[in-house]
Figure 1: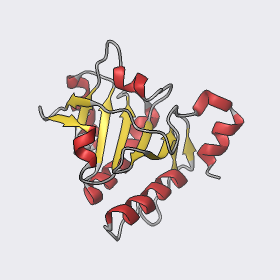
Figure 2: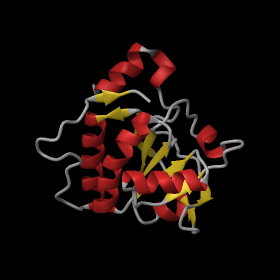
Figure 3: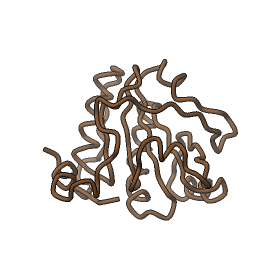
Figure 4: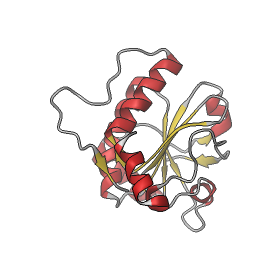
Length: 176
């Protein structure tokens, strides 16, 4: 059992992502900072996708997204869903070196975040080609990201990826 899952069990639903592995990922389509429109269903035709919901003011999001950038560089299969406006999200991407697509959630009603049942950010979902949630993580979990890296390697065939560098001081868990 990962440390993140331990805390989920210990604290009940407090740290639980609403969508657990096996659930169907709700479809969504949003404009991104680059001006393009991104649709989940179309993206999944190309393989699994790592989707990370975040807020720019969240310290755990600030810690987590640079690690997800490594996934994006290697696999090219990462989207961020920002719960903030375009200007703040653009500044965040620059400050934290994020180059994968950052989609802009409707910050009045949060329909995508609500469809995924989010209560905390970051919330990260590995969505399989068929639209099923393969892995979910709330907050930051080192073991969770190692598991996601192994699963993405298996599913994409892209070898040689490690989410963390040798000697790097990485927290085991940070709550969202």
